[in-house]
Image (cartoon, rainbow, N blue to C red; front, side):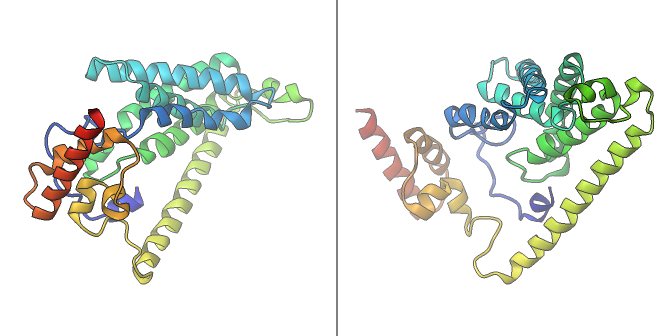
Amino acid sequence: MVVTVRLPPPPPSLPGLHSRDGRRTTNPKLTRRLSALPRLPHLCHRDACPLQNISASVGGLTWLVLDYRLERKWSAVGLCSGAVVGLVGITPAAGYVQPSAAVAIGFLTAVCTNFATRLKFLLNVDEALDVFATHAVGGVVGNVLTALFAQASVAALDGTTAIPGGWIDRHWVQLGYQLADSVAAMAYSLGMTTVLCWLFHFVPFMRLRASTDESEIIGLDESELGEFAYDFVALDPEARLVHHESPAVSSTATRLGEAERKASV
């Protein structure tokens, strides 16, 4: 969020080219594959593995339904987004809560983070990946819910861990501990990111945004490398640049259009 606040405004987006979140997903296939990676470290953990999978599954289904109410489409990317926030929410609670609590954590985290993705429009920031909504908001929600659902009996199943538990065990002060933990982590992240962004001003060629509006419109693959990774990406720059006034950019759009037509033949 600190980085997005410091960013200059992006070039104006042409209507009809973006989803309601302001960005198009470049590669849904890669998104689906990468969303499985956060689960891998927990597969060998006896207590955390089932809780992680329960929360991720509930979070994915919840996000899917919430997106369907607006788009009237079942989005695979939405399912992956919900699975990720389910993992975010259950991470502080894994090993300390019952499976039924993992269901509640996955559901509540997905609901809160899904609505938190609208914050970028209220704050008018260019937060294309929704990192703040999914990880910051999701992490705080999961941290707070851990204080509610943590149980000493569950933690003791490994034979060594002893905790006072959370609200279920009538350990009311645990909520204060969890809130203090969230505030401290966010303050540290805020301070260090602010310092790093300030240091960027003294590093040559270190910029948070592309050098020109044309580079952002046609995409960094084309503007910086002279190529693009996937054929269907060419459709977006072509559609965008048809309405652009720059002659150089228009020629790029024409070249991309010709390449796409030859590929289709």
